[in-house]
Image 1 (cartoon, rainbow, N blue to C red):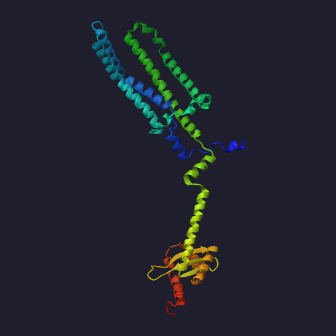
Image 2 (image 1 turned 45 degrees about the vertical axis):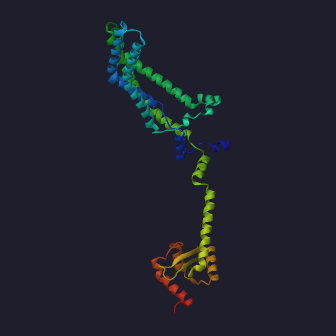
Image 3 (image 1 turned 180 degrees about the vertical axis):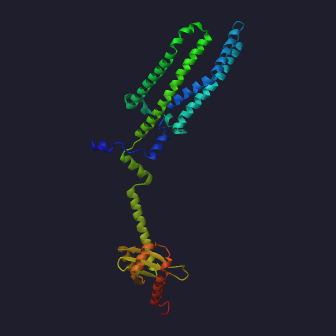
Length: 355
């Protein structure tokens, strides 16, 4: 049980996990938003262009019936007839198809942006596993989808009942109206049912989108071990990086020790710190070629003694230089005077200047 608990997915998905899921086409996608946009767009087309569409179809039917008695059943005549029907049908349906396609694309792009991937189209034999299919059938997600379907059915039925109930007293009088007025009445009631249904379904789509995003985050949650493994893949194994840093420090220390024999003087603390300086004619200022504390300081002093490099004890100066300089730096300008006195002393020891 402890092993199972340790593998609980309690961590929020990382940016890499979200990007990988998006690359595979696994994004938070609510089917309700495109559906309600398509329904609303279609309703808008029928509201603004419905009369025009009905008029075009009426003219087409009238022309067909007028020619029915005189039309010959020759191939050329039938070809012309079917071609006219096809062209008029396309003209009537183009506005509706454009709005439907635009609504479908916008409903998805608004949720997760533009995404082109072939992962969803690639064959996956795991989807044919009946056991996995049965698990999905009785899963929580399936229960949620069933609940949403039932709610939509109840909403549509309730809206239809409320709207129709308002016109119940007008229904008996339809028998005395013309066919055109009856169709107009049915269209008016149907439009109201669709309009109010769209309003309720839009609110439902917003709630479904919020739930879908939450569910998507839950599905992509990671275990602590997965987060650690991903960090290792992205940043590298910490133990390996520590080993590399250790090797780099050792190589830098070795190079520093190799530069000590070329130093001009070593300023000490005297036991805890050591800073090796190098100065030659033509240099802008003395440079720090090595510095260290503890065992490193002892090693610097040992090498200096072996190469006859003077050791000068100056505790304040050694501490200041150790804290304020790095390997390869020129000494700070405020230390010029103190260093100049030490270099003059060193040069007198070596006989390079007159006392």
